[in-house]
Amino acid sequence: MIEKLTTGAIQLLKTLIETESFSSDEDQTAKHIEQWFNKQDIPFKRTKNNVWATNKHFDESKPTLLLNSHHDTVKPNNGYTKNPFKAIVEDGKLYGLGSNDAGGCLVSLLATFAYFYNRENLNFNLVIVASAEEESSGPDGLNSMLTVIPKVDVAIVGEPTLMQLAVAEKGLVVLDAVVKGTPSHAAHPNNNNAIYNTIPVLEWFKNYTFNKRSEALGEVKMTITQINAGKQHNAVPADVKLVVDVRVNDKYSNQEIVDILQKEAPCDSIMPRSIKLNSSSIPIDHPLVIAGVEIGRSTYGSPTLSDQAVLSCPSLKLGPGDSTRSHSADEFIYVNEIKEGIKIYIELLEKVL
Image (cartoon, rainbow, N blue to C red; front, top):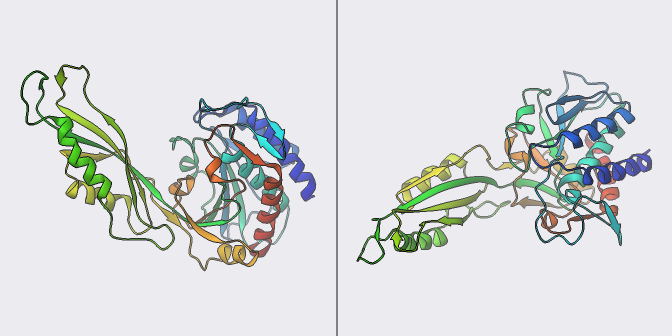
């Protein structure tokens, strides 16, 4: 059964790669996932571009384990030498946009769900969501499904982790900061040039450190990622706009980060775009983590963001593929990583279900 499910999973991934599915435009990949459920004779539902199902013997008296990964992708970058929408297998690698992030994880979780779908007397209910809009943190992704699907008690989020256990994940706050000055003609003296005023501000952001360090996630990482000022060569602008990217460990809430920066940052204003994408984690003594360690998996803290950020329950990030390949040119996943991923997912769940 596992071999048949694995073959079907790899074929589905090839189909998904060859179907454009940018965030908010995943209609066609959602249809392919629906077709996969039909082939497995598994009843499913679709909410916008999210496709989901529960195990056959769902029991409301039992806790529920969510299996989730996404079928949307970013747009391909200009570095591709291969067709990003062509599933190409070379030297054991399956190339294509979304192969690694997170198509391999999604099809592996779908195969795992199908493996357990008919089983009776499970300790947990299973619900699987093939979600949309993960890459854009859009309003119609997994976040919109939490009031639609049954209440979730714990989750496995499929993202490329080399099948190691990401027991914590950094949150994200993006802030818009402004440094002001006096606008003037470039030919005249000006001791309050907004661009020059920005130099010590940049130094402050470069050197600032947050006090609380996490054992799993390390320090909070703050980076200036964009600067914008001026429209013409002979006019000193009134202000400089900065974009600040903050990756938040599990020792701070996003609101705490905002409060600290609004109090201490030496700019004229700094405002968050959103504080919804908080850090997430799962207790190290949770049965899922214990089971994973027992089968030889290691634990670590992940610096990258996923749909874990919208969950309020304990969640584990785990999946085939390597995060460093995500959003890269000529993205790929090893075919054997998918085979191993399905095997390890099943072995893990056998211990807790």
